[in-house]
Length: 568
Image (cartoon, rainbow, N blue to C red; front, side, top):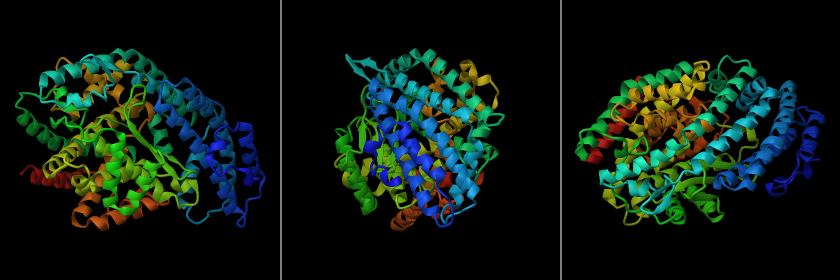
């Protein structure tokens, strides 16, 4: 029967659930033995990939234009009529496989994850997952609709970033206040959406037999290499080792600005220092893609060719525009064996970092395509972010060659300094986000009240980000959790960035000694996909999975040493 399954996703995009179910029925009816297991798994994997690509393409269409009612309807139809039924049938197929006792080569680690997923599965959670996804889409719509007027023109907050990067502090303050005023106008709407999300997640955990959502999420994310207690060790190490280093960076910057205190309009976003160079690095997304392809070709010719393929096949949506969902991501079209990169570029240097970051994710997908079964492609986000963050650093030597007159030797030096400072400034911010989520999901129903969330975020901010002065701006400070989409769209997905940044610095340290060998080990680790545990994957990449105070002292010393050389 599986010879009737489409070879590409296009016809499958319109298949009703009744047609899809026939293939699940076939899998359930077929005998499962040592002789039949490989073909049976291949068929199941193919069906799962088609469903995954269909969902990914619908999500991309919706995030490209959050005002497109037809695109939203198509996605909601999939979420309501296809995904829950397919998930229930998939659970039956999964149970049949697990009960067979068969363990094909290369499926040892995926089988362990599968057993966890089977144990977590609850039919009553399927409609809750659908509602959670819809509420996440509503959050995107709220943020995507935010625009402000500046000098007679309408801008999204992202589009105003180039004008914010000015040495005129009064202008920066005016822009910052204009943006935050607009963001605070949605305070009630985001709070209402949050209340629904929080209660849904609490119910999902309770249905699965967990006392709190953190315990459930830890299992669902297959976090076997570290515990919630280990996460607290990481946050404590950041407070002990990184916060003082970040404070030193802020103090040097404050002296450079010649101000008595750093205000929020003195930094870009939450973790970047301003460079006061408003010259655009590229004219538009097309030029960014062209230059990024050339940089990546220097990192590794084959990786550069793969990015060029994405550029030629229109698998990049890079420019910011009104109605577009916030943020950036790389999703995976598994049947087509193509990644897709989404971001919101406006010509800034930080956009260069973002395209290189998302390219790392894309290369991870490309390296995994030879793996036979979809479950071997299932990776923890910790190693996924090593792939992306390492690519930011591995690209350093080639920026001057490909970004023309802008990235000359001096500006590349400044760019490197800005990126390395960002790493030091990011870990404390990550600790705020992750610490907030630990509080949210282990404090009973306290987080159902947005006032409590504001207070918790504010306390964490003061603890980890003491160098920034929000006096008189407390409403903006305490609602920072409103503007961190991971809290709303991907709960408990943030510590991965912090852990991965440690691994990426290890990969970069190797590259400082031997770039070609570091890139080779990096690629070898990505090609393993999800077939090994996290410490093994880190080791394969030339990194160490460690995050206590000693480990953080090691990476901070490297970063501060490199920064000292760049500042000379």
